[in-house]
Image (tube, rainbow, N blue to C red; front, side):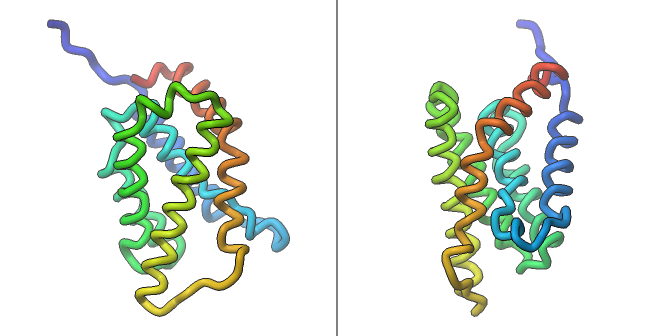
Length: 162
């Protein structure tokens, strides 16, 4: 039996770092409520494309970094992203066969679950969020998914990430 080597691990790290940079990039005040959940979207993609390499541990670490970048309670995004990574990794064979528009609906559910988990933790510590604008990033992320999927798939193919 031949041993297979993984290639392109740095491409995974580079896309996750780019997503983190987009999380903290300044936006105009009118567009800020629509900021997509970049880190979660990229995590979902890599959990779909390479579940043997990106999973709960990567989700947890990415979430801890997000907590630090956003100044949130340490662990709230880590919990949410670990749960999302687990669910996507468990369902990756089913999700990958869907057309992009159906995947976008699945991403909508995953991002909404992430937002709900973060909202739950914020409620427990006494920082409830108000208003419907809290859910706008969920919609923006779902609308962005098809294009982000195509870009990340091109990156994966170009750098032969396995």
